[in-house]
Image 1 (cartoon, rainbow, N blue to C red):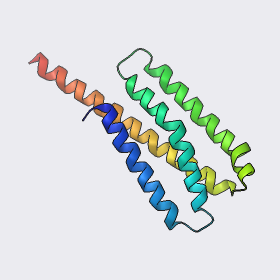
Image 2: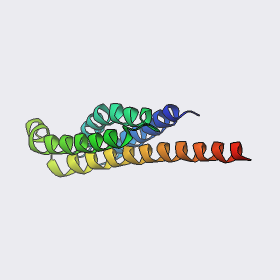
Image 3: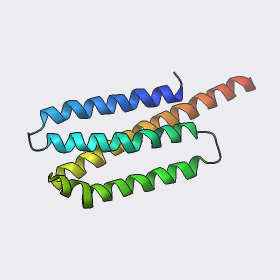
Length: 128
């Protein structure tokens, strides 16, 4: 499977798990998790895709740092503007947002690590 394919599969798994969890949580927390999931996918989807595409390039670290800054800005905007405007409880919304974002960052790390491992394996077989 290619790196973009692994990223899409991982992101879809995180999204499906969060969506299922949103219907199991107490009624007041479900909408907060669904909002957090939507925001996280809108922000993290393109950022993660950009990072996966930047693997093995000189701009990888710049893309990674930009993604971290964007995630921080989204959490701040959600805490200061979006959640209060929608009248949702702040704690479950922010907790869910950070949780989903971190789960998607773990997916990024797994995809990057798998790509590095595959590259290392190819190099070791070429040397023999």
